[in-house]
Image (tube, helix red, strand yellow):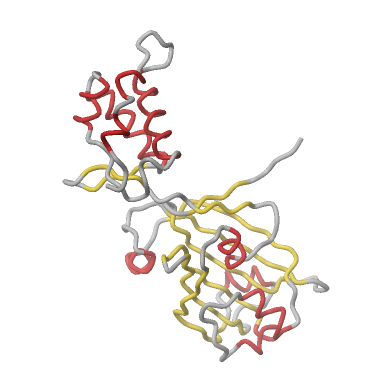
Length: 256
């Protein structure tokens, strides 16, 4: 551990208010949340065991377990069987109020964006892709499959389909560690200005789980987006991205 656990646990006996209307498990939960958010418990650091916490708080071990279970469900903690409970790495937050690309999102959060190419090829458009791009089924599209990373850690598996006649200059170019949107604007004269996007929970195939370095049953989010360029009344890109649910979250600002 990188923090002084003894110092972190000195406050426990005085933290619990047995006369409070707040349940004991909730008080323990908020204590642990504060320790994490204040940086006393750091990412991937082992927190005190249920036994240690129950003894220090002088409360039932099941009460401590309920507090920890809820923090695991919220994604602040994770368990390793036979080892203990650890602090999760904070999720990267992406707002959904305007069109941005992955590279810009990562840079704005102080992370180094990356893109590892899995494949680039010209293919006949599958029926679903053709429908999204307003093409006839079988018309050519440029398919770019990449793993998007932040500080070298895989975040998403991205499959982009571009109208080939519009994105032809990109075929054969090096798409490693570059922004696709910047490449489209620079080499194809396409400035992307609008998109329609959907988000849903998705299961992952074994090979996808391996690429994203997650378990096959771990949470993932499927993001589908159809993107339009300035001056065109037709879509340019259709992308399906599988994001790690443990490392990413999306926010929406709503006004009355």
